[in-house]
Length: 337
Length: 299
Image 1 (cartoon, chains in turn yellow, orange):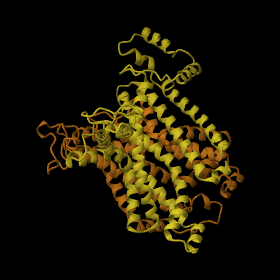
Image 2: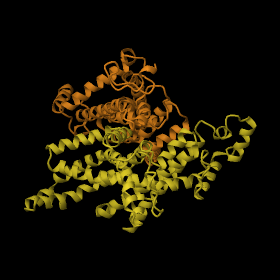
Image 3: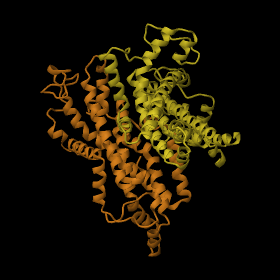
Image 4: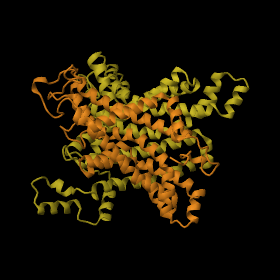
């Protein structure tokens, strides 16, 4: 068991190497000279050459790569041109905001999509099955920034139920002391229900936007895999032995059907981390996505590069976690190793 | 279409599929799922807008009119006007061409990059396979939209680079499907027959393998068209690629976003709805095409 986990973790290393190489290539090999950019518009060829030297851009590529890797190893992702802050500390301070949003979105999506998919499979051809199909197709077709805006219009402008879509907390409240960085958890830790409610009110719409977006693939996969399991021999045997339908569906079919769904979560995360950027822009959410977007607009490259690298590493680790979880749940995977 | 269309990987090398007429099969699938018919009608509408848009649009999409700013939808302006008094209906119609062009070019590009290298990987195996699979795995290690952002940021903020970035993030999908499909056919009877009659490997690849996996690849292209449109619109929504005042759905939604909180919903709504309908239409068409070409993968 532990050996298998270790073996799976070892496969992450070449992937991470690939990720680092790609983020390096994005800056160094492609057209566009960082030195010209850093030198600013009034640069002379001489000053550009000087900057190139100070950045180490006059060295051969392998050497530049080694230097990049050693910087990474020391946790140095460069500094943002517009704020002057080190990219690492900016990303670290904004990461909890993004993580809180993404996780809430995902949890809501799973809570809705899995029962929907199961019901659609159990009552195949019924109204709920058609509803599931519509949700699955419509969900992937909705541009996530458009859904977000529609929700803002409906729940902020028309109904007035939700606060203005401006960040994590209304200006009247001060952020809870930083323990986990998740406002919902931090405010509960200090027992401040008022702040908890305010933070939750801000979170509901963006999290719902992400949930609507990631509902579709989860519901679709749950339905398909549930259908496959319900048609298999062991379910027929369980039914023939006179077990109650609910026992057959929950204990026999559901547990087996969840396995492929967990695998799909990897793909869902890929979409979710991308959609997160757009949702953060719509709701002025102070996470790493909106940080990257601001940097992109200002052609500030170091933050963008740091952002791409952070997201990729998180995604690789999430996939690793999913695989390990899968191995823990399903012993057959362990046998194959 | 004289050959039986690709009948899924498992059927290859088994008994030849019964030669029912392709048109008849298509009609059956559409009849069973009328949604595909609706999607096809929508598709024609979108293509008509893309081709004729600039000619049939009621107003100049760039002309501002200070006397009619932020007007809600009316008989004169069906979709209302934006903060500069530009007619939103005209802008949505004219934008169709650009959005569709970005998607089509990126899909064709990724078909050439990913499809062909995937076929080569599946057919030749060996180091070709290792190189292509490694590239695909590395791209898959990134969240796709994030990688697209990074590529556009690195290459420069232009529409061409949006096309390229959208193509690159779709590369693994195409390479994997093409690889799997080519792999199961590399020792098929018709390939061995072609080899026996003296055809070179590259010739076999292009004249035997490629035409046989075209149906599957076409489905793949149709399924990714929707994603390509979404990806490109998302990039321009965050301010990459297309610059204002060019009409483009993503950037129009971004411009309208500021007015949502004050209740001027129509500026963002109509371009967003156009985007949604286009993506919906391509996804449904893709599903419909897949049901026709490859019935085993229905979900």
